[in-house]
Length: 264
Image (cartoon, rainbow, N blue to C red; front, side, top):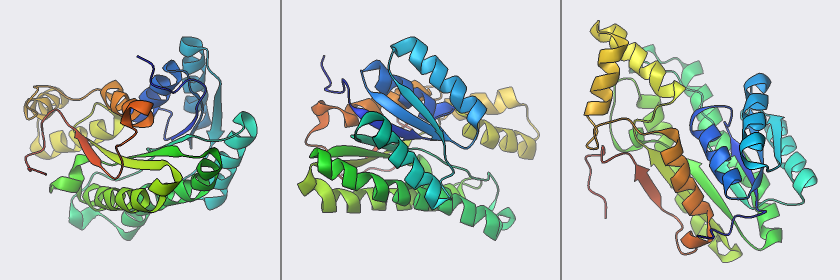
């Protein structure tokens, strides 16, 4: 099936590991060239080397901190200079503390909001003019199911992910006339370093083993296991493709059925 991604140009933030790395590999596997960014250059170079070897596509690793506007301007400018334009932006970067409300400091809150909300805003602001010049594009924002539920260790995630959904809907309404489609994906319990941090804290608080707490996390999902990063990546690829031409302004759960709410 031709997804229309051959020779498209993408940016994936937070791409040195987890969902971001899987997404970058999936897009490159469909023929896209891309820039990937994170704060740690060593892991980023490793990801770029792996993606090039597996796909043969061009991969530009760029060190960028989502809290630094000039870094984001440099990321987008470097991508356009290297590849001649920009078609797809996947906002995925996050940096959050797994802690109960009374342990979350102003620094924790400000950091999470600055990376995940303001970082997404900054990236979209820089990317949209280039997409307009191309006659359209895709922005896929990675949120999280904490937006739809409460959780002792995920309160700041709930607040920021709710904001990501709202941002996605507002951008979709404003830029659909330019051919720019904007959607949000809420991953459920996905096997990432972020989830490992939460499971470790839960195990410590409950005085159980990591193995037991990991099993509990998976058993609470109707499909009976944790979600894998490449399963989130597959949904990103669909939304970036020409098969999703009429899909915009949506927040889509990829959670194995774990969400208990009903949404119409």
